[in-house]
Length: 138
Length: 138
DNA sequence: TAATTCAATGCAAGGGAAGTGCATTATTCG
DNA sequence: CGAATAATGCACTTCCCTTGCATTGAATTA
Ligand SMILES: [Mn+2]
Ligand SMILES: [Mn+2]
Ligand SMILES: [Zn+2]
Ligand SMILES: [Zn+2]
Image (cartoon, rainbow over all chains, first blue to last red; front, top):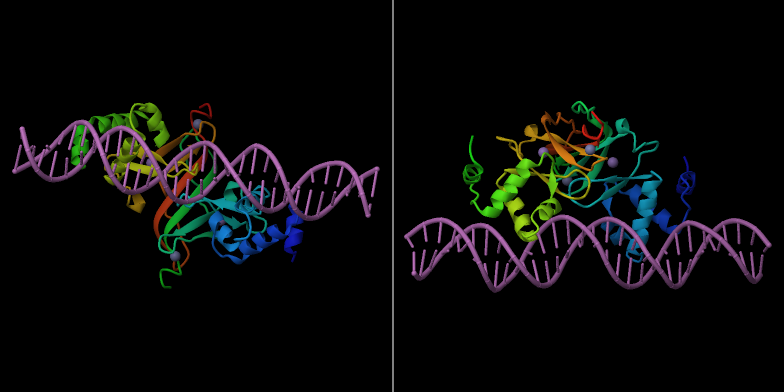
């Protein structure tokens, strides 16, 4: 059980107050967040700092980006030991058409997708849209 | 074998010179196009007209929208008899990381995706990224 | 400690795509 | 033809993302 400070340092990210706060914010959220979400949570902080912080997290692979089709990029913490860039490791994402939230289905890996001859698959993005468990009243 | 005019009329789209040109442009392209692509192809025409034309085509389901993760919406003609809104009918899309082009793999349908209990799947977006047949030198 | 160095932060500005209101032009129909 | 309706063109706006540059802060070294 490592602290957030240790985790950041292990990934060559210098520890700052802002970064700790943003990390905690992401960790506490169960859903993927937009930059605006972070902005609203830290109104005293500058947009750019938040933007660059999330980009740093992304580069260092402690956060992954999600394109859920809404046109707005979302972010979520990576699973422990997740290798975002390895295809077989990728999980699918679910976007709720009702509450508009997007979540990682981390234990739903993307199935092998067949592509035609001559095509080389390097990466797959799979987003399922529908009604989430909270909204389906279950 | 129906003409473009007949096809437009069959879909309750009034035939205009602009619409014929844009339809032909889409038909001649083998890849999905952005609004900018259309803009560049018709420099004398106004952006808004092109935009609204493609939106009309989309509404009337002779064109479908593609979100390939580049952040820029792309469009492609629907297959004859395609029902974009029916989940089981949806094909997958391939985005080439080399030439940056996106194509419909119309005969590669999206497999059934399992979602957790309480979640209801209404729609699936599946984009495979990699190297296309032209770029893989095959 | 003081000076140096480099990264993080803050401020400002810009780009690009998408969308809308409204006037003008074209087409359809009585 | 004249009226009604739809298509087109122009201007403007919004939203998200990104970057340049100055400033602040922290760490390192003399
Ligand atoms: Mn995820
Ligand atoms: Mn397609
Ligand atoms: Zn929901
Ligand atoms: Zn290619």
